[in-house]
Image (cartoon, rainbow, N blue to C red; front, side, top):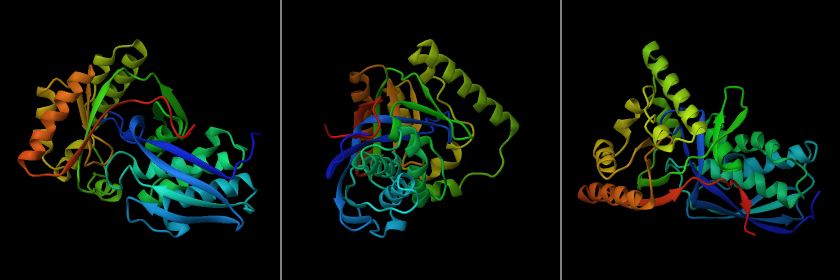
Length: 311
């Protein structure tokens, strides 16, 4: 057990879930943006939120993703009856409803921070379930695709049993485009059908298998060309602003592929190099500018690092 500290600054990465081809089972960590959280030891047992910067979110422990995850770690580490008190100061850089893992970054950063403050009594793998407690507050589900990536980093394949497998990280440059609207996960899940055609399921299964194989083979372009979705995307496109024009602009600029990031409204576009990613970002920005749509662009890559301290 490492030295017990009184204050720690922690970061957790934004993430892209689904990666088009892997609904509810694929998630990857991004180099930027990063969520920031400061945790401090308190004399009052339990969890308290002292401040939230950058977003209007609940301060109640059971209604906030960060504090719920933090409390779950305390309960797990201290036998169900927390004796330690912690205070959270939350800096929401990864905005709620953005489609790049806002709730997962909050959950992962808080779970990791509490464990660090306690001197790391729990292994990193043991933090996944407490982090999912936080994610459940936001989405009403315990899907670990975003959460695993935010906690562990890299590219994660999560099975129905919750087991996380780490896939080879492709050498992609990524343009992430975030139109400044919110699409809540619950809203995006509500438009999905309860049943799908067998042919669509088989095609999706084949694409995911080929994607995984080509990653292990070391073929980043081939893997990118597998990024097709026959299950979810068509139902969510009506929620996305100017999606068809954005897609055409990115592909015309040289992107290999991409799609909706998580529930949207952000989209991600994978490219061979930084120059192409910049061109794709500029082309997408031109589409949004034409429609007077406020937006943010992130030119980034996959990150092997999940939640981590500032040092």
